[in-house]
Length: 233
Image 1 (tube, rainbow, N blue to C red):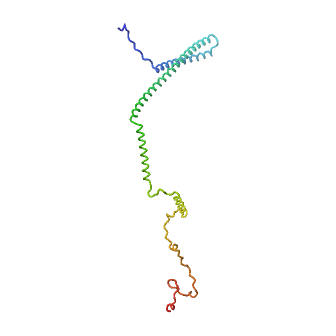
Image 2 (tube, one colour):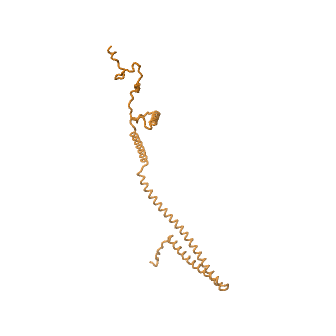
Image 3 (cartoon, rainbow, N blue to C red):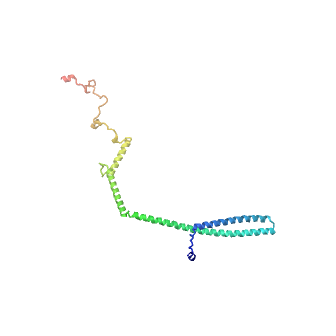
């Protein structure tokens, strides 16, 4: 049966871009080594041409140099061709890597999209709006409570600002007059009854008396004493 139908040959897998690029690079390195050897040989022939005189010997050296130069040009052409192939393979490799990156990116985006859809099912825009409205109302109520608690007791609402400014100016005047101490902070003074009753003060010196009474004695109250004779009559 094998002789009639033959044996199925195993197909070899196609080489990858990287494998082909590595193989071409190895060939290019081998060609580059050959070119370096030919350059060294050409340099040797150049020295020989300088030393030999014109004639058959110099012509033989020139012939060998021309042969080496032709080989070098051939290898340089092969090297350039290999470099072009490597360049093309590198472009293909870059494009393939870009496609792989795009595939991975698309797979990641699909997975993220699926997860996002599942999470969005548990969140409603209407619920978010209602929550925001409730939070706004709560903050307004909290501010009103804070304002109410911070309100001062016994302060009338209809306070005249001009009247308050007048009192403030008066306080400043008192502070300037009393060297920085307002009148309501000064210690209490005893009332001056004499100034309030407008009574004149007693004279400090001896009052002038008539000549007849100059030698009269004064009683305990400071009044002229009455003579005893007048009291007897």
